[in-house]
Length: 188
Image 1 (cartoon, helix red, strand yellow):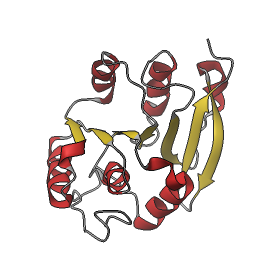
Image 2: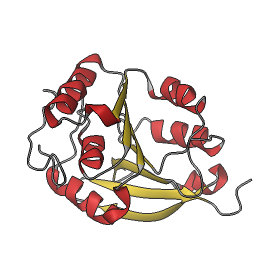
Image 3: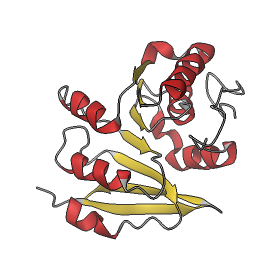
Image 4: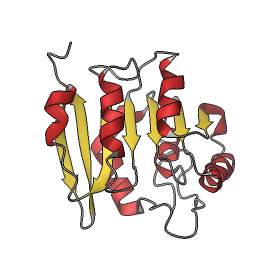
């Protein structure tokens, strides 16, 4: 796995061995960032369930002004730390070695919205629903925030209308998909 574009282009990233994390392939990562286009530069990026940190590092390499990585697994967090140091992007990064809900509550205290919130939770456990329910009443996202969920193809987002969000678009791959989510305009 490598950084696709930007200041850290072509640098290879460390990943964890085993099946505890599922690194996003270079091809899928490239497709994702092509869809985000030039809007990443200068953005605040939140990478939840970060794994190796490849998505947030790609955002930093492409000019994001800040990326916050949230990863509870100690070995994965060490991998993120190593990758940030190797790519020389650690100055614009914050690593929170905590479970996602604890990290979100801590970030909420600052109350500053992110431009992008990316999450790649373990499949089939509905963690994305828990996070979206929290974000519905959070200062961490606003009408300009794009939430991106990487999930298996079977993950259903029919509940979004009741949670103050809607699907903006969906990109399906062979084994998984990216769902782009935004706030409903008439959200209270």
